[in-house]
Amino acid sequence: MEEEQPLKIYFIPFLAAGHMIPHCDIARLFASRGHHVTIITTPANSQIIRNSIPHHPNFAVHTVHFPSQEVGLPDGLESLSTVTDMVNLYKVYQATTMLRDPIEDFVGNHPPDCIVGDFMFPWVDDLANKLRIPRFAFNGFCLFSLCAIESLKAHPIPLDASPPFLLHGLPHPVTLKTAPPTNIKEVLDAMIEIELRSNGLIVNNFAELDGEEYIQYYERTTGHKAWHLGPACLLHRTVEEKAQRGQKSVLSAHKCMSWLDSKKQNSVVYICFGSLCCFPDNQLYEIACAVEASGCEFVWVVPEKKGKENEEEEEKQKWLPKGFEERNSKKGMIIRGWAPQVLILEHPAVGAFVTHCGWNSTVEAVSAGVPMITWPVHGEQFYNEKLITEVRGIGVEVGVDEWKSTGYGVREKVVGRGRIEVAIRRLMDGANEAQEIRGRAQELGKKARASVQESGSSFNNFTALINELKRLRDCKHVD
Image (cartoon, rainbow, N blue to C red; front, side):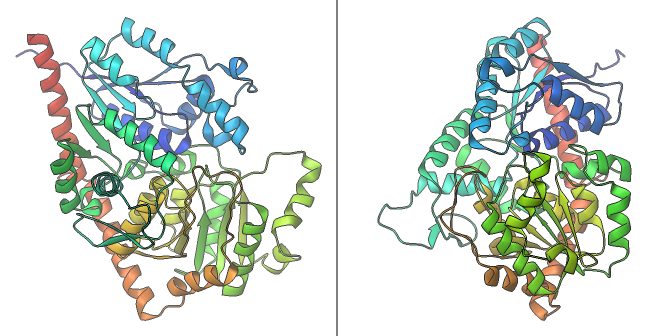
């Protein structure tokens, strides 16, 4: 009997940490099953991938030129996650639109059996069709959020309506405090329309969190197949792998874990708003006041501020109350830059997570069984918040109602310290509500870990997807 050939699959992740990390994790999953995987990316991003993913004989990285000079960027700045202002954000995005030709040249000269492309690269659809290659889409969203988007497509919010806004037709009564910005809705709708032309959608989630009712809703309303293969973060098994996931942490994992080891179970609040959200100083000040007033111990990740080194002390005084770090030297840890988030969330000392509801952060918290304090900022994060709070009951809302187009720029509203403190206390005071929410979060954490084990839902989905890809390859050969 002829030995079955492994699949040859190309992955094309978008150049932002929130897209690239889970995309590469899923690529690694295919390599671990014996299939030949190639990530197509740019030089600076390829270095991050090589440093964060253990060497595997079936895992390769192909680099294409990043047009730094053409768009006016310094060398090495090749990801949305490495910029902190709108000007450079636009330049990086502009550069990503110029990657099409070199990627198409490589794929055309070395065609694979399948392409998994980020929906931020809609032209991958044309490329796959031209080469008659199956294409699977990846967008980094949970399926629930896509269902919410489909609901708003079918039942738009009337212009004269007042909040809260009910999302019609969903399996649960879900309401929004604010409507999505028109420009964001139009861009997402257009990209999802192209995404639906693919052979299927790869989802970094497990079926039990999205729920069978939302999987059925999605497939019924779109006619599109979704493949739940996550949580991708659980593919990293060792402490070293978890510490190296993504960019290099500014604080050693050992130092961070040692500090948490000295704290009681569920006593620490972890605060992080992801790699694409930069709050102004006045909002950071309110967060600091709220955390201190709550009396809780904390780990707070703040994006690294770009600027001259001698301005660091001046910047610190703008967003921290006077004497804050001295008063909280034993109670808190501030990490300025990238942090080993998966390791932090998995530590038993962490009792709550103040989060922007980016999907990676959300599914990492669920996988660790940590309840959330939700503070969405932009993108699909307001939908994710509703899955956390209204549908699964594993978090509480700060009560944000300003939906921005990006994580940068001026905000019209500052969330006051009182509202933040109340949300923190709701999960950290040990009352009945907090215990019930924590119990549900821990139960979902067990289901997440079980889903990626042999015979788990994601494990079985992955086996079925491989069989589908082989079927598609064999059909092409017959043709």
